[in-house]
Structure formats: structure tokens, C-alpha cells
Length: 266
Image (tube, rainbow, N blue to C red; front, side):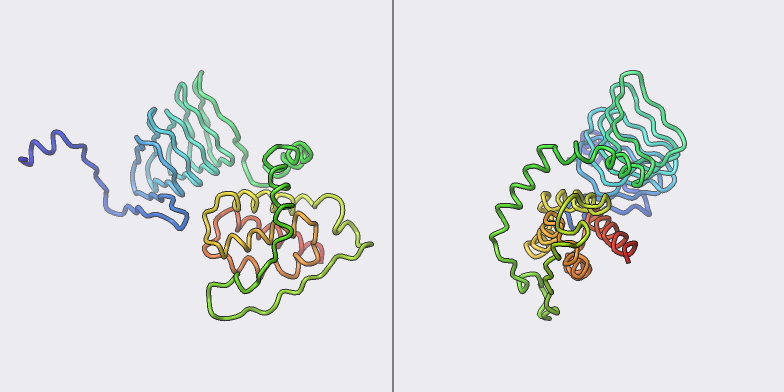
């Protein structure tokens, strides 16, 4: 086929100098480009970033991304679901749909028929809002199913030797049963920070984005939190988290929450 005819019939993709396109360990595509970025097809992304321009999501696209960042405006004509959006402005055209958990923007423009869900300014604001409705959140079917699944797994032995993918054996994990009279440990509700750590870890466990070793570690962390075994958790959470290969954002946030809780209780 002649070159001119091929160009007329085939769409052309131009990747400008300085662009970066790669897949992360979770199979999500990460795109960073120095200029404007237009997304015409639906997809699941880790990071979408325009360093000096704007990002536009066309009306035919249904985009899910962990992090969206651009120097100018994020235009949404189709659908966007994102954990965090950083931009000078967010503009939702008519009939656009956006589910944005956290947003850092100077301006927000919403079309007459557009819909925006979420829009918290920080993780602290999000956690404070969820804490006010903690009982309602725990009663959702998702968490009820997780608790039943955890109960079914209680009889399965936790084999520490299966945690490591390396040949170096780790120091043994000491399991400490909470004292019956310990203040609030082993009974009652979890502190807010640990409750949200549990939510994040349960969500990450449900995604099955990790290998069997890392999945087993996340399962053990979830079990310690569900059983309110805070004494054992304090002794082991650093070691367990260190064994998770390429931890995602939710695992890292859960680790920081546990770290902050135990640091404040010292």
C-alpha cells in the first residue's frame, strides 16, 4: 500500500519527545507527557499526567485512574473515576460523569447535566467524614461479606515460611494474645485510624493484584485488625508490610495509618 494511502486510512499516533508510557506491577498503564493529552478510548490507568498542558477525556471514553495530574485544565466529556485529581481547574462538560475522591484544584466548573461524586480536599477530610458514619459504613454488604470470609479462613494455618520469596529466613513472628483486661484491645471497635487501615487492606486484598506470597501477608494483617489483636499487630506490622512485593498506594496508606497510630500511643 502506498505511504500516502496508508496515512489517509490509518489513524496516526504521535508520541512527543519526553513522553513516558509504561505498565506498572498491577497491569495499569501510566502515561506522562510534556504537553496536552487527549484520551479517546476507555481504559484503566495508574497515573495520567500532563506536565505543562491539559488533559481531555472524550465523550466516548470511560476512564479509571488512580492519579490524574495536569498543569492546566482537566476536561471531562465522558466518564472519569479517580482517586486523586490535581489540576489548575476541573471542567465537567454537559452529561459528563466524574467520581473523584480527592481533588486539588483552583477552579471547578460543572455543566448543567454533569454529575460529580466525591470531591474531598484531603485524605484527612475523607477519613473524618467516614468516621462520622462509621457504623453505616461497617453495615454495608461489602464489609459484611469480608467478615464472613475472614471467619471461614480462621481455621487455615498461617505458614510463615510461605511468606518469603527469598532464601533468607526471617526472624520468627511472636504471637501475643491480648490480656483480657487490656483497655479496649481484643474487644470493642477499632480506633478510627486502624479501621480505615482495615478498609484499605480489605480493598487491596479483594483486587488480587499480588502474588500468593503478598496476598497471604495482606490476609494476615486483615485478620489481626479484624480480631482486634493490636498487641500482635504492633509487634509484626512493620515486618509483614516489608514482605509485600511492590505495595500499592492503599497498602502504603494503611502502613502509614498503623505507624501513626502506634507512634501516638507510645
